Image (cartoon, rainbow, N blue to C red; front, top):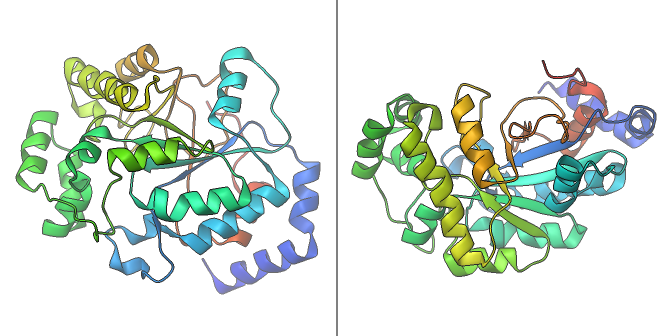
Length: 307
């Protein structure tokens, strides 16, 4: 982002211009924000693999402050009420989501969510959580670099599994890439603010898998979470999530058999009632300041309908 844009965003925020725009220009649906890890402020961004995907705790707090002041944070329950039952949503609804299930969702993200009373959905992968290993992409990147992660994502499912099993890496208590443990996941779920959803068992690119493997990944994830949580997860997110690239029409059908709704990625507001099984989410990176998030919500993010 240019210095000029950053200064303009800050000035517009301070002057209340974005607030007036938001009041005058309603959202064409729900702004669903997709986060991943949340790092401690003392941990530099470049200390983590894919550090831009791990927002700092202070950045998340900045964003939550914007959402509370200018929008209406909603829960997974409210989203489903709109999607399934057609209930109206409050003005400028925003749903906060986190992918994968990093341990810092408990240590860093949850305290911020509680301070601002912002509900969220955590899309978790049960296999690395149960076994205490790094998510495969963090392990492969550690051993071979980010290019190897991109290459692995293009492999057929069986080849991908051999690749990631070969490079599997345990995650000790001090590893900033560590996933939640099962007791930690239960603590997040017991907070009352965070709903736990599914993200497949092991985070494959589902489009590269056979229907049987997709079923195992999607339904197996739901079964594992149900056993831990004592209730079935209702929401699901496709790994990577590029519409009809990282998953297929058959994937959507499988997801809808196991969950009430599912989320892809895509720089659009989502319409809960019409995009069932393929709701859209905005990816949020550490480089997005509070003023930049305000700028995007106030008009930079496209309000054009999905086609």
